[in-house]
Image 1 (cartoon, rainbow, N blue to C red):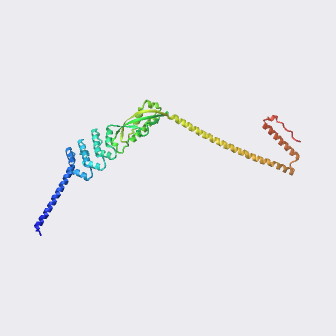
Image 2 (image 1 turned 180 degrees about the horizontal axis):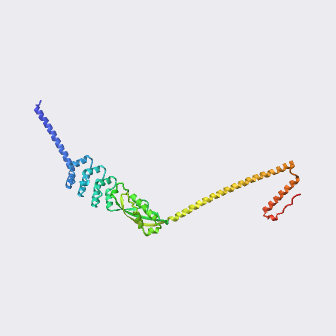
Image 3 (image 1 turned 30 degrees about the vertical axis):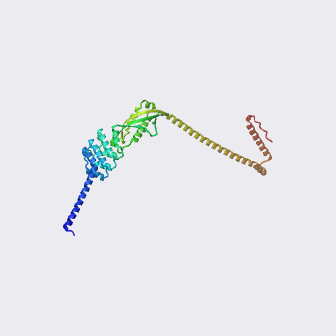
Length: 356
């Protein structure tokens, strides 16, 4: 067996070897990390972005792309936007992890600073970006106003159609110049709302005109009437101007409506007349039925006459002379009826002689 001193010496050598190996491994890892982030660290150091090696390593662990944060911070620092303005490394990382576009936010802030738009700070810019709006485009639209066609191209309509009070249709094409309202980008209405409101205002302005000649002589009255209604309320844009690009005269809608109304009235009158005619025909048929019923009762009554005469003869209430007188009266009545049917005046009628 080895002496105890020898054994302790061997253990010390093993421990020393392990420590040296661990130190070499740590050094290699440090060198690997250093060389991986060396370029970004040098850029940060030379530009004053103040992002250290440990910060870059922490971004890797937090699943943040270090190059995105470093480039954004460098752009901000070079443009004079410092941590006092809220642009810190932690804030950039938080916005990146929230799904925002860090570079676009910084570019928007730089553009706003150059345009002297003091209302846009880092917090508002990140909120606009996370709301789904293009904050850079909004700043650009605020600096350089945007022109919107009304009606919108591709909507299937070539012009807005409105009718003046004299019934003449006008077809209007307008162009709306808008500027982005930074403070209303979150929760504000979009371009579609502006187009709809402007279209409604144009139709209302034309409809309030007494004649289409007034609109053709002074198209500017439409623009003034629409602008006076403040159609950009609660929208993400501010209307700068409304220009009438083209006006065309359409159909005579008033005359067509009157013709359609006259035709409808004629059909109603025809229907009422047809109803009255049907009621008259029904009344005539009812009268004919009553006449036939009366004739049936007359025939029935006449059939009872011979039987009454026979009963009178049997009972002795009617004699032979009475019977002859009755026959003469019947003959006289039949003759008068025949003469009346032939059209002979009553004064020329011949009165038959009565028997006995």
